Image 1 (spheres, rainbow, N blue to C red):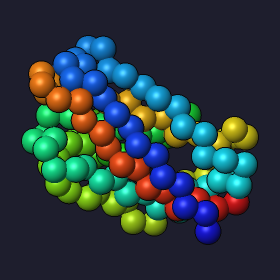
Image 2 (cartoon, one colour):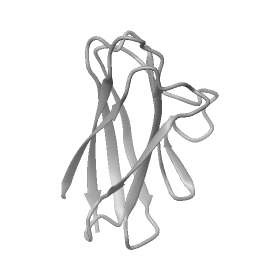
Image 3 (cartoon, rainbow, N blue to C red):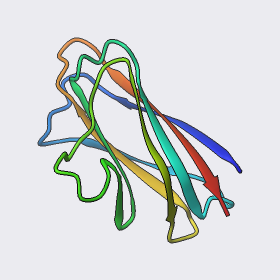
Length: 116
């Protein structure tokens, strides 16, 4: 199964009222997301926030969660097996986030196992 990795960076002082979004193309053979892992490096201190979705479906935080954003510090968050079938092509995820840190930019590392 193909493995796809992306780094989503958020500039310092990106406010909740004006989050940034970036679309990532997963490739032609990525019709399904098998599982998803987000690595939050040390130094975030819970000040950077992220959500991941596909057109029409929120992947993280998981559907039905009362939490609207993920955040943390020196942590790894995994979804387990989700088998999310994507519309497309193109097969894409959308990362949206904001960063309340006034001194530092922050990045999230996103690892996906995909299948056709």
